[in-house]
Image (cartoon, rainbow, N blue to C red):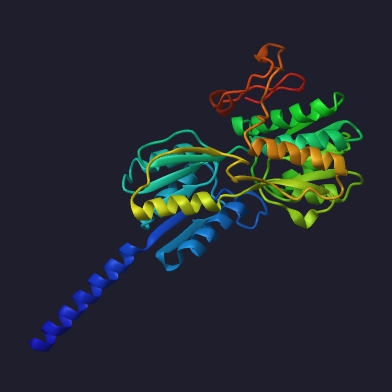
Amino acid sequence: MKLTSFLTGAAMALGLATSALAQDITKVGFIYVGPIGDGGWTYEHDKGRLAVEEAFGDKVETVYQESVPEGADASRAITQMALQGADLIFTTSFGYMDATVGVASKFPDVKFEHATGYKTAPNVSVYSARFYEGRAVQGHIAGKMTETNIIGYIASFPIPEVIRGINSAYIHAKRVNPDVQFKVIWAYTWFNPAKEADAATALIEQGADVILQHTDSTAPQAAAEKAENVITFGQASDMSEYAPHPRVSSIIDNWAPYYIARTQAVMDGSWESVNTWDGIREGMVGIGEITDAVPADVKAEALAMKDAMAAGEYHPFTGPLKKQDGSDWLAEGEVADDGTLAGMNFYVEGLEGDIPQ
């Protein structure tokens, strides 16, 4: 009797200790649209996850699911992660927006963070980076370096984030090269190396000697590497394995500080729903090394623009600017407001073609 009571008491104590230990561990989940080895968008988000592990050690457990399609599959994956005890879930693609909000309504005690969206809830935050700042730098370099005056752009989906990038790159290429022309191919994918490579090849065959991309793989870099006198820019990640040529610089997404801060907020009970949109100034957007393939004066100009944006002295969408249909948008010296940028659904004057609906 006494031995049985002792063993029972010991088991209960062990169970309580195990439960207390489990409560001390914060479980952080990540839902990815591509594979962690894509070399671009998902790769950088996963670097952020690893940074959380490094920052908090055994105080956290991170889990992830990669290559989750946008839509119903996303709802299932997010739900499963919540059911498995995640305290905080980062959903890292625009197309996860409705799924995130829908699942969050069923798990009010779980905190959710959705990348690049705009729908919030008491337990849903949104966060994004001002990628258009990096596109301004790329556009400047592209406009200066193109010899054919044709710049190719591989676009993913016709959402405001992508449209902003096209406009920003075009504005800054056109300012330094009035003869520049943009050719845009809509790939309708975030990550599909074969389609991305085909798009890059098609643009090169149309005369483009600069390729910009808003897709996630390194396939456009590889396609350009086979061509002569074509330059590219890394997207989301440095893609430095293709430097110094064709990749001459890159936009780098640095999610680690945000992921660490938001995990800490859950740990200390200070988490609340926020809307974060940071850029070069805050370090969420980085400009990868500009290689020596870029002339020294062009490199200096690009870095000066980067520094001006970091200091808050320059905004890529500063007037005078007109819309594609010729109507006035921004007067001389006027800066676009965040509301217009967040919902951007138009091309600026000079861009050819229609935005798909």
